[in-house]
Image (cartoon, rainbow, N blue to C red; front, side, top):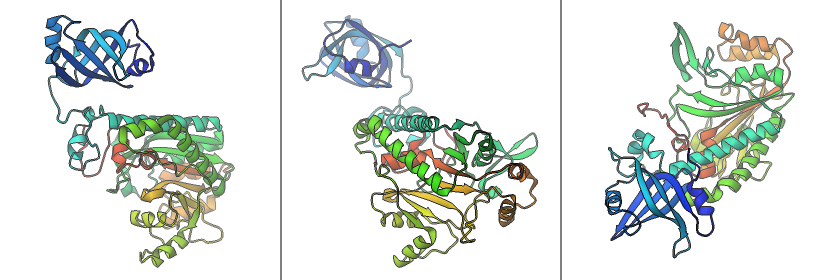
Length: 441
């Protein structure tokens, strides 16, 4: 098993005895009797110097013909270059993984992974370009965010609940979900695990789930995928203001921890700084109705009861420069049935959506969940689901000691996109599934 990584060598001071390093050739330069290899692994890149005076001539000549991306094992001494950077002077090098098929541009080269002209090629060959340092930096940031998300949950007494991916009930209309047939029964790939967390919250009081969700309804904006990852949580004895405060705490915490751990890495890889707009809480709020009025004053007409478009959200973000903000009081015509009707205005629900700064759109949603069976039945009728036997297990939960509870749902890729200031959510997941494109690789 590999014991020494490039990052270990870069941190060492002074000369060292013989070191064994496993990695891949990222680039190669031949200058007379010296070959310079940039050898990389999962942690970074180091220059390997191969001198014709230090290795057998047959080995030296062989290395000249090894292509970029070859897997190698190097034995050598760690020294400092004239510029003061650590480098490995080889006394032996072995070809471990050869290259019989080349890709252009080279996967580890300094290409612009956001170049629209390259996107079809990069997506079709994602299994190769996942090696690119920029793609790696994004996915390592994603891993960091997921780690601290779980840390926050466990530090705040939440229990992880593994909810099913196959479900008989969609969150919205059946047409918005992705149907499959299992044992001659029509079921769906999950859109939302809320029904299952709602059952579990009456046992564990604070629960969360991090898992995939699937969208059957086509959405071709820069923040939609067919398959994406959801962070969902439900909290007992909780109202809308409580869950909003929790989410603000989470976003601020994630921003702080991820900036501390990944800020320099992201800047080096992508040339951009992390967005830290989420650090300062509380975030400003605007009601849906006031948002409609504000948009109207700006010449953007939208009808009450319709979802705010991406353009509307981008325009609203100009009203709160450098801040994420809440849109509260979303109309009941838009929201799914499990959310509480506002007691002061029956047209709206006790729901708030968090909109990212800088025009990045909706990040997540929060809601008070219905605890009263009569209100639940009213909302089921609103959504033409009254009497639908598939929802009886949801009704059961509301008839046995159901208490006030609230929830939030956050799209992982949307959060990563916003914090990294990158163009599209497809760049924020290892193997993206986008609309109107073959599911490949």
